[in-house]
Image (cartoon, one colour):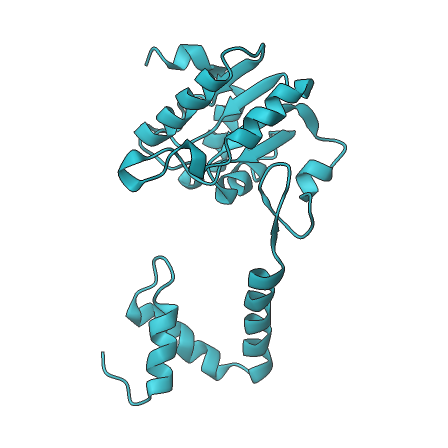
Length: 205
């Protein structure tokens, strides 16, 4: 794809680095922005700059937040005795959209994957273990994707907490094996949360 403007080409090149955005889609986005009032583009640029410079991660659950503690952790109506363990922020959003879960979360920031050089120390696992051992948590729900890496991560955390008297469960396998959590429809995900099973039972599958 050849461009008559290097400025246009640079904008398209940068836009096409976004996930799922090819050069043609990037060109369509850039041309759309050029047709909008300059104020719209400035607002978009400012919003992106603010995200980069001002966004924080919750000190308790590692969710994205505007302050030291996210709105979920600060909400007195949430059940602090239950923690749902997820891979990333997108999973929090997916579960929250079901409106069926009222506990807290813990965002690991990924899954254990030796092939990708991701070990337990690269994830927010130690802070999770510290939360559980504080004595305020009665149940840990594993809601990682039904993949080999997700199951490996679940089992690692489960073993790390073998000396703690706590209920561990995993979302029901209404989520197809190999599927990422964020792509599940809200009804299926809601039922998976509600019909969760003891984690020990999931080890038999």
